Image 1 (cartoon, rainbow, N blue to C red):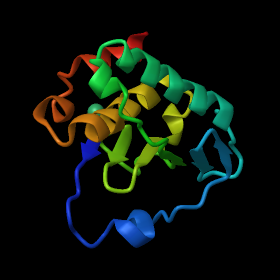
Image 2 (tube, rainbow, N blue to C red):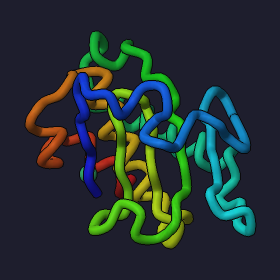
Image 3 (tube, rainbow, N blue to C red):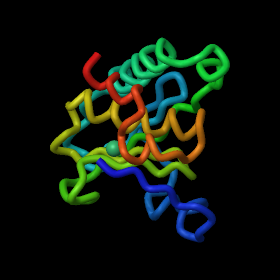
Image 4 (spheres, rainbow, N blue to C red):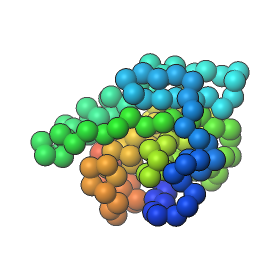
Length: 143
Ligand SMILES: [Zn+2]
């Protein structure tokens, strides 16, 4: 599980690292795209619920000042195996894009993990305990 911070380079932005910004389903602003047409699981409703659960869990750990900062729902793209090898998921901070490898598509914990990276970046900016997974919010994976 790797989260890349790509600051100021030319690859993000317009083409979203070649992924574009299209999606197959949207719930409460959270967009989901399935790279494999044969698999449309989990549903966007489920992914949106996992995102909401992540917010609730993190909010319970943070000060009112931090927890009041809204976190834009990401674009979640289920990608083929080995796309982000050797990791299982990846978060692009500059475009708000979360990649989940298909073999982990039903693993709630991986989504929560990547959502925590995104939430921490929005609320704290880039900081060490996000990159090294020491921020307490990462325990939300197990809640
Ligand atoms: Zn991670």
